[in-house]
Amino acid sequence: MTKESRTDIKLLAFDLGAESGRAMVGHFDGSHIQLEQVHRFANGPVRVGGSLYTDALYIWDQMQNGLQKAAAQYGKNLVSVGVDTWGVDFALLDGRNNLLGNPHHYRDHRTDGMIELACSIVPQDEIYSQTGNQFMQFNTLFQLYSLVRNDPNILLTAGSLLMLPDLFHFWLCGERANEYSVATTSQCYDQQKKDWAWDLIGQLGIPAGIFQPVIQPGQKIGSLHTWLANAAGCPQLTVVVPASHDTGSAVTAVPVSGPDFMYISSGTWSLVGVELDQPCITAQSLAYNLTNEGNPGGRTRFLKVVPGMWLLQQSRNEWARAGRNYSYEELTNLAASAPACGSMVDITAPEFIDPGDMPARIRSFCQETRQPIPQTDGEVARCILESLAYQYRSLLEDFELVLGKCLTVVHIIGGGSKNDLLNQITSNCVNRPVIAGPVEATAIGNLLMQALGLGYLSTVKEIRQVIRSSFQPVIFEPHHSLQWEEGYQRYRQLSRLLRRR
Image (tube, rainbow, N blue to C red; front, side):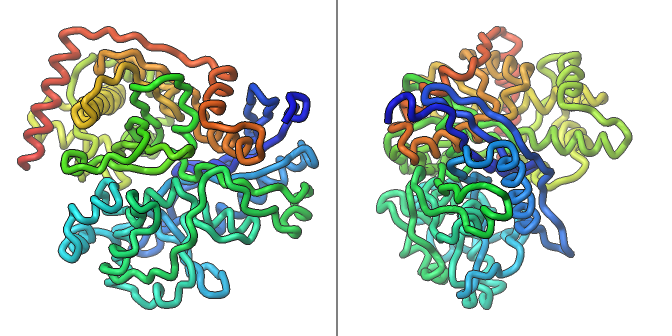
């Protein structure tokens, strides 16, 4: 296409995260992109009795509101739409494509103990040799196995399984498919054969017929339903599937030009990893519980999933219930005023998984591990941020060991990249430059994969060039002192102690 034919393209991304969902319009001229948020809504799990659900119908209703708002501003200038969400969660449809109940949320406890039960049938190393995925009890595989054991009738009724972004793409245009980047988060996908892990699925008694064909990011799968376009007042937009796992879209938007970098997609979760030409599935990567997930251009996200801003989010909620309504900026300022290199926690410890009174749990953890107990809200926030940074350095060392190479720079993208204090602490801890931004990496990656699918761009390399031209990152240089080195060594000792608990 010519430069002129690319002028002023309007693309629409639905970026659905654990705390909120957004409708984002991308204004793309062929070499630069600008973002505009046209709709935002709160999002979170819903508890009914002892179960936790994702309210898919509420999200869908808000997506229609976002579509209407985008159409009211840009009408016929809109050309495409795509959706990204978090991974592992899914919906089941019956044979007539009706939703079989609200999808369960990954934090639901129905998967407690399922890793051990599944691995008693298929050994852990066999599961890993096929899927290459980090073992987490909320993975799709273990959610499905919990249904095999406890609710087999719903699987017998199901006609299809759609991961969450696949569900919303289906509702947008009527085409059922499983997109590659999110399918590879499920631990049901064979990384070697590039297909569903049929043997594993069969061994665990999961019906094979519910899985859909796997399609690549950037594929056009249809046009907006006529009724939906008419209701929103927009054209029948082309539905282009991005890397529909939000981390897949975010990593696509890392503004790198060379290899040997580590990325941190920082939000409720921190997804910390490197980009590889092919999966790394070895005994050593299994020992470190590292995951392989698919990305555009045949690339692999080789990473570890750890809690990110989750502890701070939950602490903020607890303080709000006590009448102290902090913004994240205010919390960061309080943390900056607290002493450096103080108490620390293992952010991956089981006591920090569930929602609840996180400050009380942090204090209890510090008391149990014979550390000074954080007293003020700022000290608790500082403890969280420093613990995150120590975890990042530990992971960087793991990746360097497994891959046998030095990672020279760290890119932090996503909402957490706005936290300058965490960025500087991370740079200090890892003794590497930290490049922060873009903040809206997930939405940007979604939008530019749509542009690629429409033919305006050809490669991920071109996508990253657009991002470098459009956004100015912030660079943090390390101030690596003996104080930070001693703090990290205390963290390592704490980790070894906890493994013996």
